[in-house]
Image 1 (cartoon, helix red, strand yellow):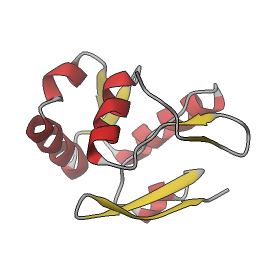
Image 2 (spheres, helix red, strand yellow; image 1 turned 60 degrees about the vertical axis):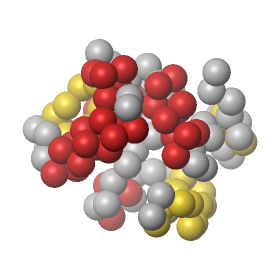
Image 3 (cartoon, helix red, strand yellow; image 1 turned 180 degrees about the vertical axis):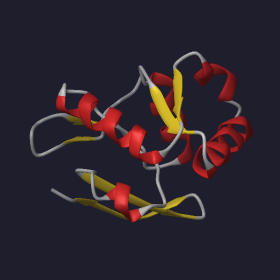
Image 4 (cartoon, one colour; image 1 turned 135 degrees about the vertical axis):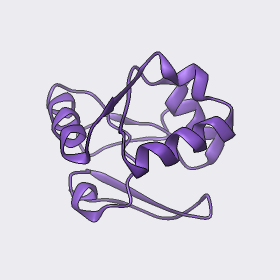
Length: 115
């Protein structure tokens, strides 16, 4: 069971993603996983395979040609009330987030509300 660690300013439960194990649980509990076919998607496929969860995620994963297509979908889902967990190295896309968690070597080094 996914146990939210906190709530956002709007009262929405925030998923606990403060550790690799918590992030795995959040991904496995998610209704949908979305990422692109480019380098980030290739990296995530390898990461999820290394974590042993790639096969479990495949049925609920949708991949898009590029980041802009992914961001349009995520924006629409968020506006409809979905909670989004986005992983990116691109500051253009990170600006869309309400909450930012920065990782280094698999550890949380910074976390903040951005809106």
